[in-house]
Image (cartoon, rainbow, N blue to C red; front, side):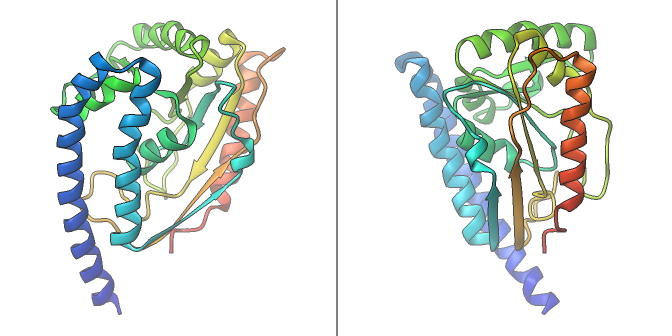
Length: 246
C-alpha cells in the first residue's frame, strides 16, 4: 500500500511538473503582451487561467481532494486585507482565483524569475525587499492603500515565509496595520495544504486539503494591536482544528 502511494506520488508529481513548466512558460511569454494590450481589469482573469489549470491538474494527477468552507464570507465587491497562513504554493494560486482581483505582498526577487515573474507583474503585486524592514512596511502601507482604493484586495502572509504544517511562527502586524490605516476589513483564511503540496519539494502527495474562510473582521474603531490579536486568535484556533491532510 505504501509503495503504491509513493509510485502514484512520483508519477503524478512528474507529470504535474511538466505541465507546470509548460503552462508557466506559455503564460510568462503571454504576460508582457497582455499587460500592454489589456486594461488592468482584464489581466488577472487571463493569468487565472494558468492558476485554474494548475489547481485542476494538481487535484486530478496527484489525487487530492479539496474542501473549501466559508465561501459565503467572500464579497468581491468589497476589497479586504486577505490574511492566510503560508505552507505551500497552493494557497497562492487558489486565493488568486477565489478573491480576484487581489495583489499579493511578496519578495521582490520573485519578479526576476523568468516567465514566472513576468506573469506575476500582471496582477500588481507589492514586491518588497525583506532586508529593509522599515522600507518594506512603508511600501506595504502606501501601495496596499492604493490597491485597496483601486478595488483590489491585498493578500498578506503574516508568517512572512512558508511554514511546515507541524510548525508555528509568530505573526507580524503588517496586515492589521494596513487594515486600520486604510479602514479596510480583514478576511482571515487557514488551510493545511502543506501536507499535499510541501514547500520546496518536488513531490506532491495524495490526500485532502481543507481551506477555511473566516468571517470578516472589521477594523473600524479598533487599534492595530486589538485587530491583530482578534485575527490571530481566530487563525490559531482554526489551524488547530485542521486535519493532517490524510
